[in-house]
Image (cartoon, rainbow, N blue to C red; front, side):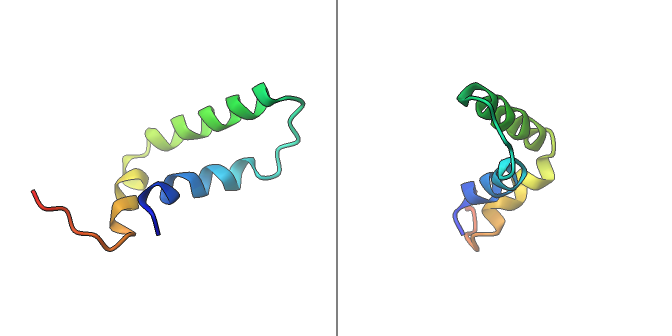
Length: 57
């Protein structure tokens, strides 16, 4: 799994059933969900771990 997929997966799941009237509404929904994920560092921190890669540092 790619690290970014850990972020996009919940975002796509949340907007998958959105019946948007226009592209602006989709954009706002995606931005809102990404902001919610940003405020949950434990979710974002787990994304690189899900790849099996180990960070040197």
